[in-house]
Length: 111
Image (cartoon, rainbow, N blue to C red):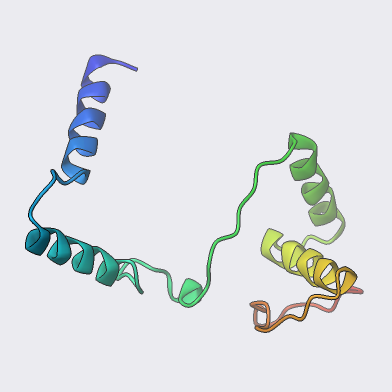
């Protein structure tokens, strides 16, 4: 990483971290941050009300997902993961309290 990039990164981090402050000022900062964490202006409409679930896996896992997509080219990674979660919840007999996000025009499992 060159010096200009390091400097820019350092400046960005310094700007993001607020210095210690009095209780009133800190309360205002926390309230402002909480308000921002809701539905942000830059949230894509199809993501409103949803959360991101992530993990780190062996690269072979990604290859397996791609192999499924080669066999079923209309399936998105989202579709494949939704199906996997449904199967997992059934296996462990965990009630699904909120429906998984389903895309309009989604093909049936037996595609």
